[in-house]
Amino acid sequence: MANFRFRAQAALELRQKQDEDAQRALGDARRATAAAEEIVEREVRALSEAHARACEDEAQASDITRAIWHRNWMRRQQAVIASARALVDARRADQRAAAERAMETRRRLRSLERLRDRMWKAFQTAERRAEQKAFDVLGGLRYVAQRDVPEGV
Image 1 (spheres, rainbow, N blue to C red):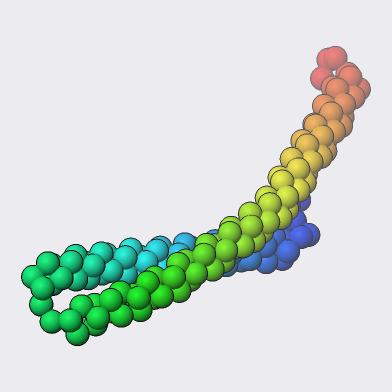
Image 2: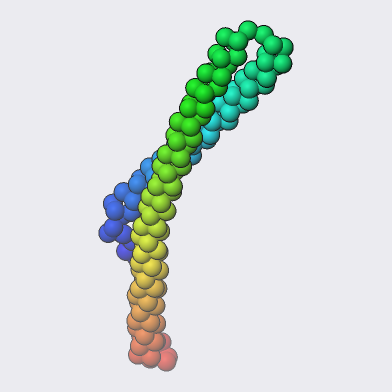
């Protein structure tokens, strides 16, 4: 029986590595997106807490410079939140691109795997046919050998 050899095995292994790399990049992109979203949430919480403190200070009619400081700090915080949201949008775009690359590499990998499977099935079919032919020849030879033997012997 002959051994099965898939000629495109090197290409299959390369595509498997590309798929693994694409899946790893997608995971990294998802983690980066989650981290950026966490930064936005943290900054929004800080802004709301600062706003609450500013309202308390204003209610107590305390120092005007402190109220101005809170207002300026909140404006800066809003700018930080805006840039963090822009970062989240960029990370989401990176994640979408990584997902598209991962899907494409997975599709290419699956096509080669299907080709290998089809070739393996064709190989098995050819081997079964060759084996059946050998059995048929052997059976024919046994029949001829038994037919040519005299009956008394």
